[in-house]
Amino acid sequence: MRSENSRAAAEIGKSIGVSTVATLAAVLVFALFIKLFSIGSAVIMPINQIIKMLAILLGCILCLKPGKNLIKGLLSGAGVVLLTYLLFAAIAGEISFGWGNVLDFVFGCITGAIGGVLCAILKNGK
Image 1: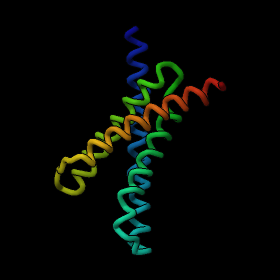
Image 2: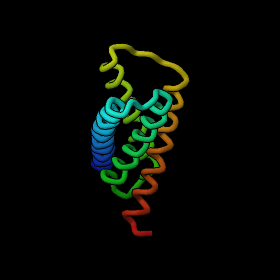
Image 3: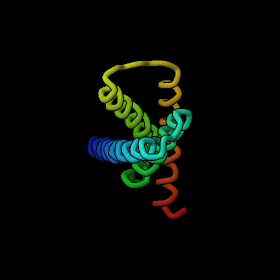
Image 4: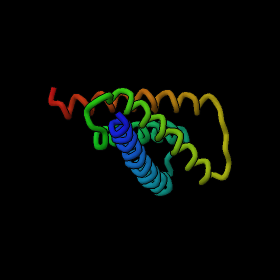
């Protein structure tokens, strides 16, 4: 039981790490596009949300193994949202909290759960 829990925790940690790195890299590339093409500020928030959701799906599909994937995916999504929030707050130099953060957390959890289920479907071949 203990080794199963530690294996699941390792999978979740790997998923969070992969998703966070993918999010940071994609946001950096997007920032370059914003700078080069003078993209309006209205599209920044939705695109950042899409980037984060795709990164969560990627992390879940690459790192999770079949077995309790809904819970592992949900925890991965929650971890990614929390970690990226802390990283971006540190980069910005300020911590702000509002309903947008709550929605971001909820969407991250839902995306992680969907990613976990997709992972189970893809890796089981069903």
